[in-house]
Every structure is written in structure tokens, then in C-alpha cells.
Amino acid sequence: MFFTEEHHQFRQGFRDFLQKEVVPHIEKWEKTGTIERFIWKKFGEMGYFGLRQPESYGGLDLDLFFTVIFLEELQRVHSGGFAAAMWAHAYLAMTHLKAEASEELKQKYLTASISGDMIGALCISEPFGGSDVAGMRTTAVREGDSYVLNGSKTFITNGVYSDYMIVAAKTHPELGAKGISMFLVDRDTPGVSASKLDKLGWRASDTAEIAFDNVRIPATNLMGEECRGFFYIMQHFALERLVMAINAHARSEYAVEYAIQYMSERKAFGKEINQFQVLRHKIAQRSADTEMIKSFNYLTAKRLDMGEYVVKEASMCKLNSTRIADEVIYDCLQILGGYGYMEEYPMARLFRDSRLGPIGGGTSEILCEIIAKTIIDKKDYKPATVH
Image 1 (cartoon, rainbow, N blue to C red):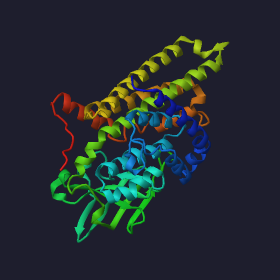
Image 2 (cartoon, rainbow, N blue to C red):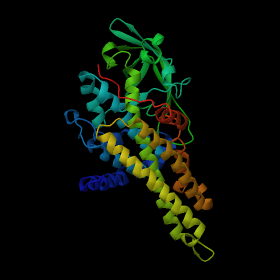
Image 3 (cartoon, helix red, strand yellow):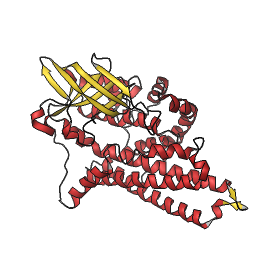
Image 4 (cartoon, one colour):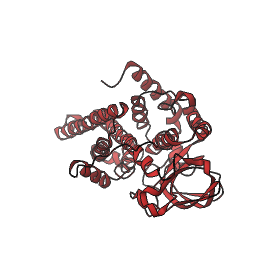
């Protein structure tokens, strides 16, 4: 229904690429918290950053199910942090570049992002804001042909080693959410500083707090129009939440597969533990849960690819998928017993990495309120209008 022969060939090719080029380095990157630059270039050379990007900038302009495969296979390399660094570049920063950047910015930054020569980060969350996007305090004041940025962002994936940042700031604070604008900021601009954060999981990725101290950027680095930033952000949340939902069902599927393999090899009381009914039924239930969220995620991806505005459905996808992934991985770790608690087995890291799912990209509590507004208050979320 969703995948063609071309999709299947792409999956096998990408899986082989990851096993050869990425997996041998994962343990080092997890320990150092630094993903070496060469792998970004290899991703670019293979076209993996351009799956949904226009051919005119070096992209491949493929349907959304190539992205689905990209996300699913990244969840199998045993590093949620590495996966996050790749998809945050390709589907957070680059999504805004593609949609809102001027032709001049696209030629310089989007082309280099697709080729892997530049790494991007999206900067929205703030130390005092979190889920409250409209309450952000970072400001951008127009001074002649420049804007001067002041403020800070936090929990930013690729926040330390990226080459540029897509930054949300208030150009007209008195307007609240309607006063937010988007800017492209070069990493080496004077006044930009970053501090790496120490995290429970996603340890290969460079999550950071970023400070902007009188950072002066050209007015031409404005993304789209002034005061349209909040609408741009909301416009892309459906894709971001669907990305995180797909990540969740993929790591859930990987956990079940690993647990089944372990059960076939582990013996207790004279037989393989896959013969014990309590474990068989637990795996049966968790496999059913995984298949359910995967099917709904695929259906929503199909609708999004057809141009529908699926903010309610994408919110439902992320809400359920991230919750179920945590539950599935919890049970799969339990099936491994003491070995599940050991770092040399994949379940411990998977357990830690998965916990960010219900937090990042809109907490489960925020998603519940969005869904409640649509089904109880009959609120009709619509795409941002183009001016």
C-alpha cells in the first residue's frame, strides 16, 4: 500500500550504508558526544539529506516514504543521538530553509546542507519557555540594514557543531506570538556562544544551550516575512511530530525483534525462554501495539504527502507512538533480565534514548491539549496563509 520496489531497494541500500559507514563509529561517538564531520559529507554524497528537497538545489524531490525509510533505518544503528543529529538537520533546520529562505540564502545554505558541507540547527525552545513558544524572550531589533539578536535557546540538537542556526526571535514583543520572526544566523557571528548539555540519553548528539549577545546579522537573513515566525513554526510541527512518531514505532519494532531473537537463544529451566507463556504473551501484545502505531503513522504520512494538513492526526501519532515505544522497550528490557540492564546490550541505551520521545517536539501534555481543542472545542487548525 505504501512502499514500491524502489522504496525497498532504497531501504536495503541505506541499511547497508549504515552498517558499513556508521555502526563501526557509534560507540566512539556515544562516548565523546561528537559526531565526526566526515559522516555528514558521506550522507550528502549519497543524497540522503536531499530526499525531500528540490532538484534545483541538489535534492532528489522524492515522496515522503523515502523519508519514512530514512528514519526507520536510523533507529537501528543503536544510537538515538546519532539519528537525532541527522534528522534534526534534514527535517528541522532544512525544512525551514526550503520553505521560508530567500533564493540567496537557499543557494548558499540549502545547497550546502544537502551536500553535507553545512550542518543546521533549529533554535526555538528557551530556558524559560519550553513548550510555550509564544512566550519566548529572545529579541531581534532592527537597526538599519541589520538585526541585533539578544537572548538564549536551549535543548538545541546540533547546537554545538552546526554551521548555521534557524532562530526564532521577537521583532515586535508587544504583539506576543504575532511578533515572532525567523532568522538565519551563522555560527561564527560575533556574540554567539554554545554550551553542551549533559543528558540522560541521545548522548552522541550535541544538545546545547545557545546564547546570543548583541549578535548583529544582515537584514537579508530574515526568513520569510517579519512577524510570520509563529505561523511558520506551527506550519512545520505536523511533520516534526510525525518524524518523532515514526522514530518511536521504529525503535519499538527494533526492541521487539531483538527481544524475540534473545528469547530464542536464552535458556532457563531446560528450555528456550520463548516457550514460556508469560513471555510469549507479553511479546505478542507488544508486537500488536507496535503494528498498530506503525499503521496509523503510515496512513498519516500518506495523507501529509498528499498535501493534507494533518496537525490533529500527527499529534495523535506522536502522543501514542512515543508512549507505546517507552512501554514496549520497558517490557523488552525486562525480558532480557539482568542483561537488559547492562550497557553492552542494546536495550539499556534504547531505554534511555526513547524517554525523550514524550518530551521533545511537543510534550505529550501539550499534544493532549491540541487534540482536545480539535475534538472538544471543535477548533479547526489551518495552514498558515502565504502573503
